[in-house]
Length: 344
Image (tube, rainbow, N blue to C red; front, side, top):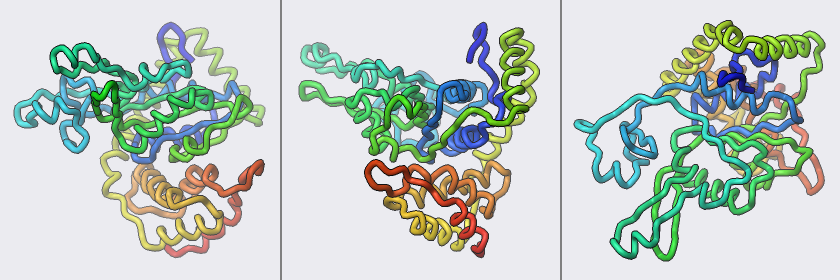
């Protein structure tokens, strides 16, 4: 939702609290492995993702590196930074995280990049033309209508998401670069399903629908019309809320590694996973990451029951074991009962 180049403020979105929470938690902690937002059209899915641009945090990056390598973490540097960058003397600059759009129509070459084979054969030099996965490194990779992506592109995304690198091989020549990103997908389930392998890669999943409360719907209309009438004034009205939210996220990132949890929290995660019959152990791990991140977002450093409730809501529903043609329905009453009776 843009008007004269101005983006609708994230803070001005009415309702959709789970969606907003899932996006915020992923910005604070990219290790949550992204979020899938499912819902009918016109429920602010794309608006929320694009609105993130204004509240994304700044980070340090190596100047002139096309992959925005992190000067403080050499474990995922590109070949050039590994060979030439010196933290004591190299140039470092500040830059904001960005939302990189991956169009559904993108070809595999556009996504992974291309290698100049002629240059390699004649001069023995690797010349790489970056693709979307290069641009996405340390940023948000956004795919609208992710369920409509070509299978080849989905496979590339799965590989990059799993390994944190993008590998290209042409005519026996290979090139690898870092590609760690927060994957955000939006989709309307009425337009087709998502491959199980891809949906499992999303750490968090939220289902959204239009507001059912009259007052909330009225507020949606009011704000939309106000934005269209005078976008500059509208954006200005939410400036302080935007700054407050950005500051809160920045603080959460700073204290994230200080958050602690008890053995009781781990037992709750395991007990809920068993009770809900979720697939594999990825759910338990993501559950704890989400709980820890929500704790930091609250500005606290000790995981409590509120964090566990939110983690269960966002990280488990899409990992329910279910039979073919059967919808997995999560029993939140059972989950709440387990958490309430737990001793943390």
